[in-house]
Structures are given as C-alpha cells and as structure tokens.
Length: 50
Length: 440
Image 1 (cartoon, rainbow over the protein chains, first blue to last red):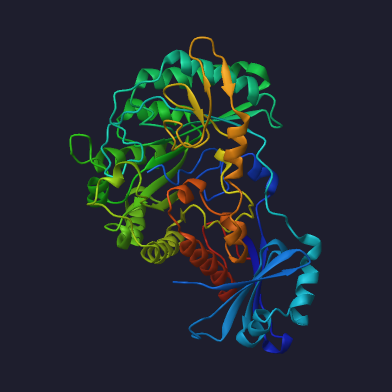
Image 2: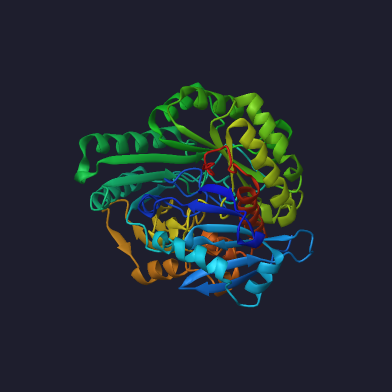
C-alpha cells in the first residue's frame, strides 16, 4: 500500500489526519499464486508448510 | 488485544470505524478500503459513525474518492501452477513438521515427466503463457538429488524449446537449505525464487529444526543463506516458524539476520500450527495470538531499519482481495507421490483437497470437477468477516487454517490497524521497506 499522508487542519479539527492509499494492480496479482502476504507471488507462501 | 470495529455501507462500499474501547486516546481510525481512504478522527465524530450516521465532512471525502474506487480481486487467477512432490523424506527432523517427512518414499520419475508435459500443454493456453512451478508438497525437494535435477532440467529444457507456446517458466521451492556448495550452485542457477526455512539464530533453529540424527542444523543452513544471497541470482525469502519459545526473540532474530546476512530480502514469520508432528510433540507449543502480534510488529519495525521486509501471511494491506488462496482457486495442479492431484501444498496425501489423479505410465489425467468447485467454494469469505476491518486484506484467511480450527483473526485485525495507525500518525508517514511509501 502506498499512501500520501497529510495533516488536515480544517473540518473543525474533527479529522486529524488523512491517508490516501494505493493498492497493487489486480491484473498483476491474478497471475500469482496467493492473495496473502507471500514472500513471492509464484508460490504458495505456506501458511501451514512448517 | 480485542479490536472491535463497526461496519457501515456507503454506496456499496464498506466503511469501518474502530472502537477505542478503553478510551485511552481521543482519536479513532476510520477506514474505507475500497475507496482507498483512511482517516484519524476525533472520537466525537467516530461516535456518529457508530450510531450509523455518515457525517457530511466524511461524505465529502468519500465522494471525492468514488471515481478512483478499487474493487477487490475476486476472480479466480487465470494461471497454471504445477507443484511437484518428489519425496516424503527429509534431512531434518523438525519438531513441528506438517508432513512428518521421514518416510523413504520417492515419486516415480515417469510420473514427474508426465506431470511436467501436462503442465506445459495447459500453461500455453493461459493469457500470459507462463508456467509457475514449485516443489512444495511432501518432503525436502532436494533430498533425492537425481530426481530433483531430472525434474528441473526437464522443465528448463521445455522452456527453452518454447513447448506448447509457453513463453516463461518461474521456478520456486521451499527448501531447508541443509546442503553444500554443489547443490547451492545448482539451485541458485536454476530457480527464480526460494523460500528458505530458517527459524532464527542458532539456539532457536537447532531447537526447532535439528537434523534427523538430532544434531545442529544452523551452521550449514546459514552458509546456504549467505551463498544464495551473495549469488544475486535468485530471489530469497526466509520463512521462520514461531513457537512459544521463540516468539519473544523475533526482533533479535532480525538483528541477527542483519549482522549475518545484511539486508535486501524478506523474512516471513508464521505461528506454529499444531498439525502433523506438532500434534504429538508437546515440548514445542504455539505462541498466543497476542504474543505473536506484538512481537511480530516489533520485528517488522526493526526490519525497516535494516532494509529487511518482515511479513506474515493474511495481514496484507498491500492488496484488496476477495479470495485468500490462489492455490485452492486456480487450482494448483499439485502432484503427490502416488499420482493423486490436490489443490493445497500441505495436503501431501490428497486427503483434504484432492481432485484428481495422473497415471505414471499412460499420462492420463482424471479430474473431478465437483471437487474442484468444492475447493474453490472454501476460498469464499465466511459471513463473520463482514464486520471486520481486515476483511478485504485477509479474505477469511487460509481455508486450511479454518479447517484445523485455528483462528488468527485477532492478529490480522491488530496488524491491519497498526499499519493504518502508522500511516496516519507519521506526518511524512510510511514504512521504509517499500510496502508503505511516503507521499508528499
């Protein structure tokens, strides 16, 4: 996730800060194996491969 | 560590506000994942959201984000993945081995050859004409070196020939690294990505992962790690299983790795799950969710200082996903030693997710579409995820974890929230490991 983070002083002070987020492109993820936090996209990260 | 969050809907998008149950702070986190927005708001504003009202100042921000909304990934991946189980044996005797890999069972070479041919014939039909291959079911892939080399050489040969229009092959494996330079050299030369199992510094590694004879394994595995990193030929990740014994040392483990190996790689920490050999071995127990989450977070922050990307599965805030597991939903063509086909790399006997078989002599493949669909169905999110702030980041977590009755929902919520708080409380916020980049 990428973000640009800025402190907002308006809104009567009700909003203290804001982060705009960027997520990975879905077409790239679809070529990989797992949705989870893999070490790499080309194989199952092995949640149970202990 | 219990984290409560309220879920609202706005124009079909999920909105979450996290409750500050203890009243320790004056601010709450508001999160609209598919609208790519996180806010730190005063508790008075949060209270309105808790009552079901979306205040105008928040609505304005949501409306601004609508044109750039991002849908979570729900479609099944259009890829072909081959996983080859070459053996049920191993050089190590890890106390928690999920596969209980100590059986002198080897896969028939003809079966491997037939499976590779089948994979190439289907991978050529995928949109990117790529084939991903891993050696991840059963025992240590390099245990039978001759069979291992046969499989890898055959795959690379077919790739060079462009067999069935396959343009690129990605080779990966999870390996114990307990071998010398000859094997290291070959692995570095032929693999794109490697997951090297290493649980920490010597005392931890040797406690968790002794050799089959009960000797220490750290020295040789650490040398393998250095060799592979120095080669620069293969992308490396270290995977550490975390026990009750090791959990308090996670940050120190990162210190140690930096001293030993430098930076520039990923370290994945996963909690020990009581499955396989760990069911019988009561001397090594899992950490609590709270222990894992808090110590993992310390290790992650330590990694940021050293250029080591510390990760754990499930709590991934870099992606919006509607299905957790690609292996189950593609499905992965995972070939077990007896020719059965399963979707999950842990399922070495195809007992839980088996959906077909391949014949070593004829090469005939028989697939059960109803079982495939049943596996895919298990990747769908449980209804209890709907009110959870981690919903679009873990998508219900690993289906096999749910099957064995293990829940780390607390960990996932804690880590998603911590990462959001991190962004929102740093003026020029963002991690230094490439996951969370500072903006402007």
